[in-house]
Length: 114
Length: 112
Image (cartoon, rainbow over all chains, first blue to last red; front, side):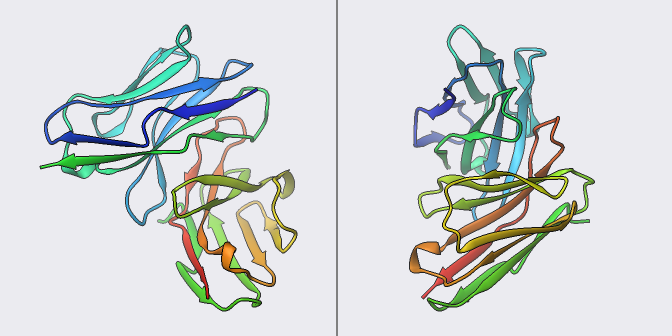
């Protein structure tokens, strides 16, 4: 069975402090994993993806995520939050054998406090 | 150039009407999708087409009918609109083998 759990529906951080958005997954197969960001009234934009290469993945805007198979986690981090990072973030699992079926997390809303 | 475009951006209509949303991608992708995002930001896949062939058809009322005239276009027609259809609808595209999806800006549908 495939599933994605984003452990926090809301995260608030102060500007300049680290960001941690948590994602756990369940997959019967070696999955690809993605993080997308959605700014207010916008479509989703790909931040980064993991596809069985390096387990530490760097994305756009200073974000990175680490794939930990033993913990079935793919947490998103950023060393220093900017006001422009305030948005909704989605973790997505793509099991390698299910063609075009993607599994979306329920999203984490990030608030950045000035 | 806009990679994935949708029209219209906003759609306000009354219950019982029929409406269509159009989607076009200029990325050369072979797969296109329709998603519904509700007021709590939950994203639900509705349909997926690969090379104009329907490959994912989730549990969606048959009032929703997708149509793919070619690989670059995927339109969504909705009959007999209901209040519960109010949502933001996103079109997306990808290469089937790569997985990264590119999303359109969304169409906010309001049924009154």
